Image (cartoon, rainbow, N blue to C red; front, top):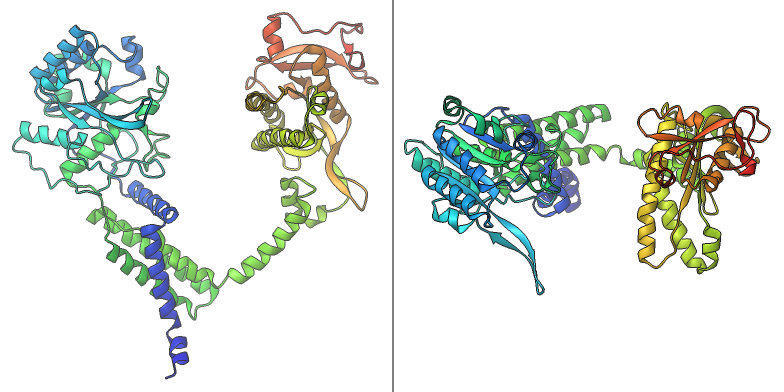
Length: 622
C-alpha cells in the first residue's frame, strides 16, 4: 500500500489521536480551557453533593441577628468572646475554633479574661491570616498571628487563609502544615483518641462541597450567651465548634466582604458563602476522607483519545441527524463517566475536553453552511448598523419587509438630553479635545440607555435623542426611561469628576422625558432614511429638556410619563405648563433627589411669570 493510500485509510484515526492530544494539552496548560474545566468541576460538585453533614460540626455565627441583639460595635470585646468560650466549654465542645483574627492587644482585662478562658478550655484554635501592609519601601503580604497572650495560654494558631482560583472561587483545600482545618483535626484527635481519622488530604486536593447552605447547623452567637446549661449540652457536647462571621449585610463597612467567598454553589446559595462554612466543609472532608483528587494526566489523555476515536468512527459515515444523536450519546457517556469517578471514587476527571472533541467532530459536518449564513447576516448587519440602532438591525434581519418607508403608531417614552453651555466650552478647546470629550460622554450615556432597554436614535450636536417602547415592546417603558435618566445623571457626575481630573471644564446635562403616541419607523426619502419618531409628544420632550434652565433642575418629566413610575422612583411636582396651541396644561415632575429640590426644601419650584386661569404657565414664556 502506498503512503498516500495509508494516510487516507487512517486519516480518521490520525485526526482522533491529534484531537485527543490537543485537548489534553489544552486542559493542562491553557488558562481559558482550565477555567472551563473548573466550571465543569463546579457542575459535578453541585450534582454529587449529598446535601447533609455526617460529622458533629456546629457553627456559631457572628451574624446580623447577633449584632442587633448584643448592640456592640466591631471588634467585640474579648470578654464577650471569653464568656462565649466558657459556655461552649460548659456545653462540652470537643474543639472550639475561632475564625476571627485576634492579633492586636485590646483592653488588658478583656484580653486576660479571654486568655483565662483559653486555659480552662484547652481545646482552642485561633485564626492566623495573611494581611496586606504598605511601608515607604515595599508593599507586601505578611502573616499575622494571634496575640501572643492567647497562644501562651494554650491556643493553637491555624492559618485560615483559603487559596483562590484565578476566577476567585474557593475549590482547593489549603495545603499548609498548620492550616486552620489541620489544627482542628489535630486537637480533635487529642481530645478523642478513639476517633478513626482517614489519611488527610494530600497537596492539590480539592473541596467536596456538601451543599448550598444549611448543611451544618448554625447557632447565632448571642443565643449561646443566653442558653441554659442543658441547652448548651444538647447543642455542643462532643462537637467541633467553629466561631466566625456569617454576614450578608455587615453593620461595619467592608466587614462582610472580607470573609465571603465564591463557591460552586454561588447560584444555588444566592450569593457568596462565609469562611466558617467553608472551613467546616474542609474539616468534614478531612474526617470522612471525602476530598477530591484531580485525575492524573495519563487518565485525562486516555479519556480524550477514547472520545475522539468513538466520534470519528461514528461520524465518518453517519448522516447529520444520526451524527447529532450519536454526538449527544457520546457526550452523555463522557459526562456519566466523569460523574461516576467524582461521586464514587473521589476523582475529578475533566470532561469539557473530551466533550469538546466530540463536538468538534460533529460540527465539521455543519461549519460550511453555518459560516456562509453567518457571513451573509454579518454583511447586512455591517451595512445597516452604520445608520440604525442594533435592535432595528436585528428586526430587519428577521423581517426584511420592514426595510421600507413608513411607520406605525406606538406609545413610546421619548428622551432628549443636552449639555449645558457646551457650545461656549467647545469654543475654548481644540477640536480634537472636543471630539474626545463628546465621545466619552456619548459612550457613557449610550451604555446606560441600552442597559435600560432604550433605543438611541441620533446624536444632534452634543444632544442625544432616545426612546423606549420601540422597536421592541416594553410595557414598562415609562419607568425604564426615568430610571435611565436618573442613572445617567449619576454617570454624568462620575464623568464630570474624571474630566475635571484631566483639567477639563465641568459638564452638566439636562434631560427631558415625555410619553405619548407617535409615528415610529423609517422616515426620510426613498434614497436615504433614518429610524425615528414623529409626533407632538416628541416635541414636548425636547421642550422639557430646555425648560430645565428655568427651574434649575436636571431632569424634567411630563405627567404622562410620571404615571408609570409608581413608587420605584420618588418624584416631586415642579409646575403646571402649557404648550403653545394646546388647550390642556401638562404637569411636570422631577426626581426628588434633584439638587434644585434640595435647595428649595418643601417650597414648590414654580417659575415666575404670567399664568393662565388654571394656574399654568406657557412654555414659550420660560
